[in-house]
Amino acid sequence: MMTAIDTRGLTKQYGHASPIHPGRATPAAVRALDDLTIQVQEGEIFGFLGPNGAGKSTAIRLLLGFLRPTHGTATVMGLDIARDSVGIRACVGYLPGGVSFWDGLTGVRLLDELAAMSGRPPVRRAELLDRLELDERTLRRPVRDYSRGMRQKIGIVQALQHDPELAVLDEPSEGLDPLMQRAFYEILDDLRAAGRTIFFSSHVLSEVERVCDRVAIVRQGRLVALEDVHSLLARRKRNVEIRLQGPAPNLDGVPGVSEVSSGGGRLTCRLEGDVGPFLAAIGGSAISDLTIEPARLEEAFLEFYEDERVQA
Amino acid sequence: MNRALFLHTWRAYRVRLLIVTVAIGLWGTLLPVIYDSFGAQFKQMLDSGLIPPQFAQFGGGDIFSLTGAVALGLVHPISVGLNLVFAVGFGAAAVAGERQRGTLEILLSRPLSRRTTYVTLGLAGALFIGVTVAGFLVGAYVGSGLTGRLDELGTSDLPLLWLNAVLLFGAFGAIALAMSVSFDRLSPALGISLAVVLVSYFLDVLGSLWPDAKWLQPYSLFHYLDAKAVLAGLADPRDFVVLAAVIAVAVGAALMIFPRRDLAAPS
Image (tube, rainbow over all chains, first blue to last red; front, side, top):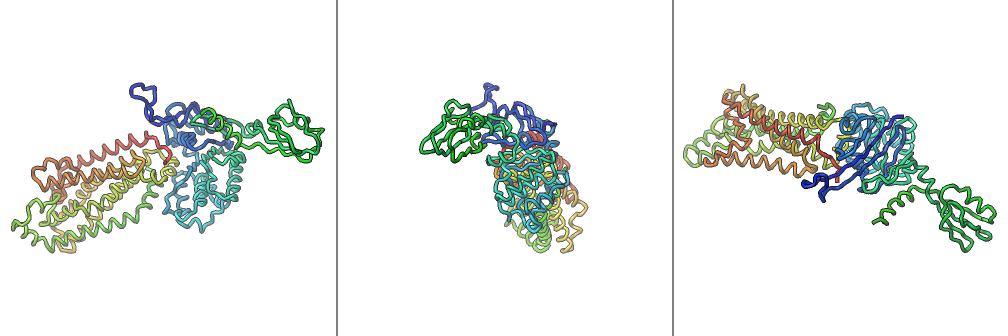
């Protein structure tokens, strides 16, 4: 399997090096991305997470040739970002965050013109329009009359209509209603099944959890986690609540169990990793109800940022 | 050049181009009519000494001959303003305006190199300038025909005058496009481009009205459009060379700057 995106120590610093000490940045210089090394495999949906200003957009813009790296190298679909950015954009579909269009054009004219500039026929357009419920009458109206959600749908169509090998989507479900979000996730699932690669930046962690195979989390321009979504979740501590009909079971020393608290016919604890030892420990107890909340990506994400606050 | 981008640009500006061309064509038509109706009276007024002779030769034109009236019309603020709609208006907005609106993101995410984008937008701008200048000259031709003075116009030199005027406004357009690729926002690109035009115009007008300031005129790009001399068959090739050199420098600078500069996320 080919590597769709391969970055090696990718770094971007805005501002200038000190004229007195060329190796040192001036106080105004900002390191927006620092030593990013990731590999995105062909056919996977890769989530790229981080709050505003973490370096997500900088990374995307470096990959597409909008920015020049300060240090490091990267390839997209085997093409070098510094030398072959035109070739890269020929096989990439891009949805920018907060996308803007030429508002005077009708939806259909906009899609036609963008497809013509892409140099590839819009083979997926009809299917995408159908699934995102953009009908012919809507497409004949000027884009300036579109709601935010409709603009976002047009943005998704323009990014995917020419069936790119790699789609780079920045906050793609922003402004979509829940039904359209679901339709969009199904489109992503189909693209993955067709072997297409999706590089996906989002603030909506539940959707990242829903659609992504792997995630990278960036903080202040640095990569702090790069992991399979399932592995990341498997290592999370889950909240457990037990309703008791008798005495509380003894959970002292049970592997993976922590923060045990009981009283009033109720026991709560946190559970990490394998559930086997925990289930064995409560096996003989009289239990009326047991709830193990699923681990959420949001908690993992917040934990990385909690660390940051503690360090600060 | 990218055909799809060129057609996109053409479609986006064609209505404005039509309006400006019709307006400048009407202005061009009016000047021979004014000359035909009032030229003799103006000449009498000038001969009476009521008007200083410098005021009667504004920007190398006059109102005592058809070619002088056409030359005057070409550098009159109305004509200059209409030609600048595309020379400076389009030039400055072509990249900086798209960037400010956020549409440059969508454009540059296509497989277009920045050089191709620049060249395509530059050629579109040159076409627009060529059409508006042609609009003025067609108007002047029609006005001369309506007043029965076509033989005074020197029609064989009209293509050369078109080239000279296109080079002048093309120079302003190339400067505006160079500013456009250098800034993230429209206002500095437009402001600097307009400042170049205004300073240039001021130097030329000042030099033409005040003999002691005549030495300033070569520093004005307007100095290199002498429409009356061109229509009289006395075009100076150096004027064309100077304007072409300004265009070449502006294009060279833009082609150096645009492909190398960072385009950070719009704020």
